Length: 201
Image (cartoon, rainbow, N blue to C red; front, side, top):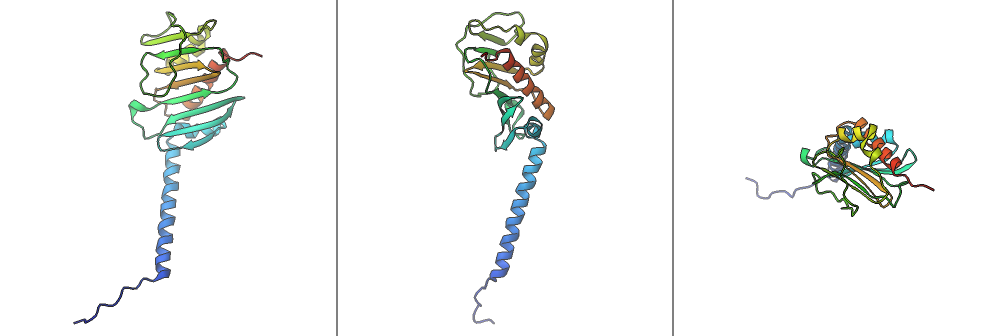
């Protein structure tokens, strides 16, 4: 029978080695997770082609920088977001007429994203789809917005919301965007809207 239990001894070299291996495994796991997440995130995949800097957070992916000589910000829900809450938003932050206000979109947007409720008068137009509304400030026209290629693309990304205010164009869609080329197409669409309401002089 053992009269005295010997004191436990920890080998500091082994303990350090085990801790180092655990840290390496955690870091490797995080790198693999980020890499895998980037491969399924259409906004992150589009960043390189758009020439924008990508930052992936827990709930959103954000791209910032210049695209086709415009300051642009892209925001997308994370790949893990449920179907009802997915969105993609493109903001064109430069070369837009600050005096123009336009709101074209669903009467009740699908998610509670922060969007200004513009005071411009509501306009009746036969081309406005059912369940949508159009607001225009004095002197602003929706002719190019609702017709031609731009009008067609807007209908393709239904439900979609277009707002022009304070020298900014913001295009938000809740369409299930799951490919990088769709992100690029929507960015080009936002730039086309910005060209309609471009600042002069």
